[in-house]
Image (cartoon, rainbow, N blue to C red; front, side):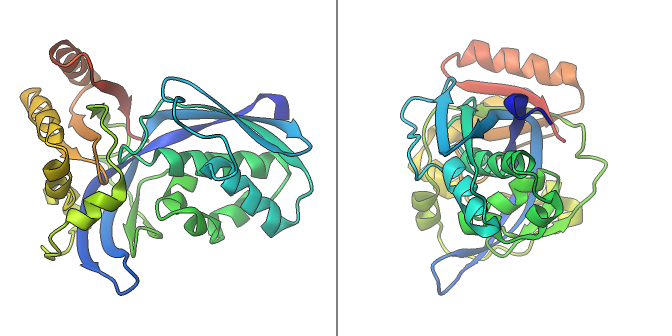
Length: 277
């Protein structure tokens, strides 16, 4: 590897279905979900350095802090401490995913930082995938490290491989009304009703239990789903705690037509045409 040119995509995370089963005594919620990942997302690069640093650029850089609490630096610092690394790393984050959007932007950035740091510092990548580093940084980070379709249970950190021919390569469109939708308030708005388990083999028949509480806080999400439904997708649903919604299409042409239609109807919204990994 040429460290001066090392880069990673922080792949956008998509919850194809998300069932909230119960609120635990520790305040967290038991979840059942199918994680999938788009081929696109933020872009993170790294170069050798004596200390840890972060520069943020890109469409959604404004308002983000590059201080020590940023998940990219927290991830690298945790790996340093765990592995006794004395080297630093200079990260540059090209922020192309909206913030607080339900597609794991910060978690994906942290996971990309871990993957890059492992390469830069000559560590064993297999250790990274089996360690509990990710879970210490956030519930979505473990899934984002591999960024491959998988089943998530617990608070999302307990992962099982999941292969479904209907997922990989599928044309997907992400749409966000550019409204920040932090996770905490959405979970607090959930009514606490367990509506049953997720049949992972039939995830397309599942639901997102956070969709209704998110819409109660941000009604614009309902309009995003309505616009997506008008494009006749195979499936349209909200991802995570919102406000990003996704739609799956039978072809790239259908997805591109949908993106053009939504961009014309709602030009102020963010859209990203991609495919599932």
